[in-house]
Amino acid sequence: MRKWLLAAVISLLITSLYAQTAYDEINENVLLSASNYMAYPGPTQHKLTPAPRGYKPFYISHYGRHGSRFHSKPSIYNAPYQTLFKADSLGKLTAMGKDVLRRLDVIRKDAENHWGDLTQLGAQQHEEIARRMYERFPEVFKDSTEIDARSTGVGRCVLSMEYALMQLTRLNPQLNIHHNATHRDIEYLNPQDKELFNLRKLKKATQPYNDFKDRHSECNHLMQTLFNDSNYVRKHVRTYDFAEQLMLVAAILKNVELGKTMTLFDVFTKEEIYRVWMNGNVWWYIGWGASPATDCKMPYVQRNLLRKMIQQADSCIQLPKPNVHLRFGHETVVLPLICLLEINDFGLVTNDLEQLIDKGWLNYRAFPMACNIQFIFYRKSPADRDPLFKVLLNENEARLPLTTKQAPYYRWSDFRKYYLKKLDAYED
Image (cartoon, rainbow, N blue to C red; front, top):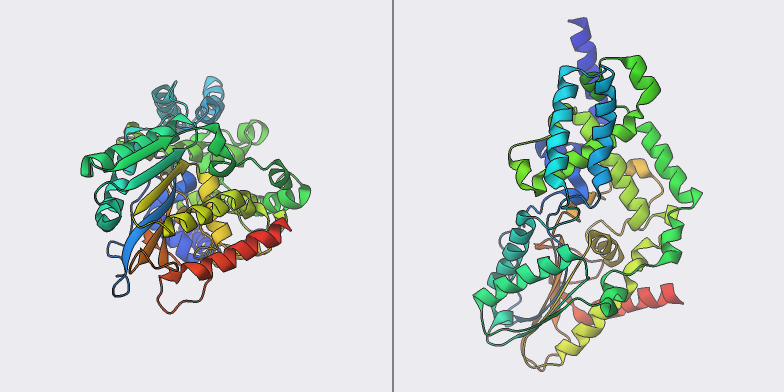
């Protein structure tokens, strides 16, 4: 009885240390802990705010991540498998450890030669996103609307684009669609800024993350669940690294068919799952958010994309007919773009990593598989040169750091002024 009470008190104390919102959300839906490997949940906002009287949608500017996929490298599947395989050969696994080893073997064989491939679920996600876009904004997709679609050259991105376009074609065969996947577009679809990327390698960036992780790396329950010899674990298993590796495989499962009948989350406690997610949340913030540890610069990786979106919107505002720009790429574009735009709470600047979650920087709200940003433009007539627009993050209306009396609608002129000034200041 005393042991049970002690365990309950410790669990309560651990839970109280964590921001209740995120802990409770992950406790209610463990799939949120998958972060960027979470399968696209679809919009939670099913009824959008009506536009002001007389305004109709006429232009959509979009950037979307590819849909659900397999892990991109065999090493991600093999790392936890090899740790358990070696331990099993020495008789160091519990019955549960042997069962997890069996599951990992099934999972890695299922993924063989599918590294990074789009799954059936990934295709379905983009079909459904395209369908909802069409149904929500039918005025944009009427008659022979021009649709310009671009993708990076990665297969899963190209296929995501094609599934979305095929769905739109089924809904309106008259649409005038142009699509391409060329290296000429990489400078804004998936830019590789070595100067900024190098900031993440500096000690001032790595040390805060390592210190945070060291404070939140306890996973004794997992070790006791899988291994029968604590001395072996102490000498031969890098415990937190192994827990993280196992979570990566658990995280990807819901994106593949095998995930309908198999899970790995059951071997972790709720606190262990939360810790691994929390450490990953900090890693993504330092690596892609407006973190002082990287001089608040990482969101500017997407400065070319934002300028391109502004330029193309300016052009389409001049046209009498509706237009659509669709762009397909990766979560490492979507997340920093969200931070650059300061959508919702993602423009946060803080040195206090322990408060990151309390302040609303929760990665699972930003970049699941098939995550997307949509700018929806509205006007009363083609003569209107300063239209209204709103931003949808994963098909839900989002906030921008702009003054407006018509939220979630903003003036395009206010947006241009704010963000061009921001981009110019960085480049100067």
